[in-house]
Image (cartoon, rainbow, N blue to C red; front, side, top):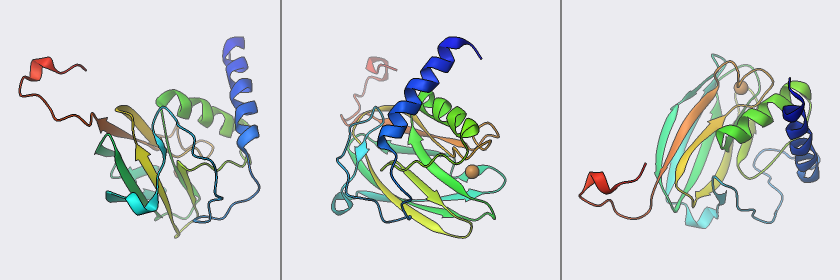
Amino acid sequence: MNPLYVMALAALLSTSVAFAHGPVEHGKKAAAVKEQKDWGIGGDVRRVTRTVEMRMADSMRFTPDTIEVRQGDTIRFVVINDGKMMHEFVIGTRKENELHAALMVKFPNMEHDEPYMAHVGPGKRGEIVWTFNRAGEFEFACLIAGHYTAGMVGRVAVLPAAPRTPAKAAQTK
Ligand SMILES: [Cu+2]
């Protein structure tokens, strides 16, 4: 591993530790200050625009593995673990998830809990409410040690809020 990457991990770890809480049961999120992330912000359950059911399996797959939302949507994710092992649903940028996944491999018992993640035990279900207030291509992933590299990752496309112009050529990326 190159030294720069190690430094980046260390920086991320210190950030994560700053936000680490004690054990938090699913569905009992502490009332935390909502922090704007590149991939959105914690949502208000009273402003949910859509519910998405997300299933996780020991085959290291999410179903569905791709979702599309509109910028400004507040999504209630009902996350169901159909497997016999622990899984989790974590929304983020690819870069953030890659770094976080690497940390989880290094520190498998690291406790982490944020409004954009749901840790779900075998046969259980969890819920999070997230507002996608920034357009872009993001990921959802399971960061349990080894799961991310085994392919337990999906894509979320957040389409711009503005109505599409008829001229497709006018669209940027
Ligand atoms: Cu998993």
